[in-house]
Amino acid sequence: MAWFRIAYRPAVVDDLALVDRGMAQRLLDKTKWIASNVDNLRHEPISADLPGLSKYAVGDWRIFYSIDRPDQIVDIHRILPRKSRN
Image (cartoon, rainbow, N blue to C red):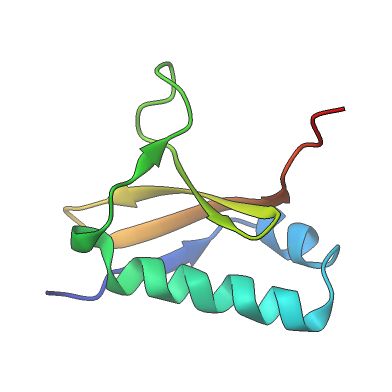
């Protein structure tokens, strides 16, 4: 099982600025975990009209990513808080 490289979009820096340091580290660690377990995960698509974009929940936060299998890259698009249901 090969490790995939991780690419962070520029918006991820702004997203993590909203988070306390401990949670930011937890989220970054989870992106590494996703990259090391690409073949073992069920990648949950966001919606039918965005088939290549998946999400992974970490507490009240969501990691939005896509996978480039030929180049073995996990592309992290955004890390955002879960929307409130109110």
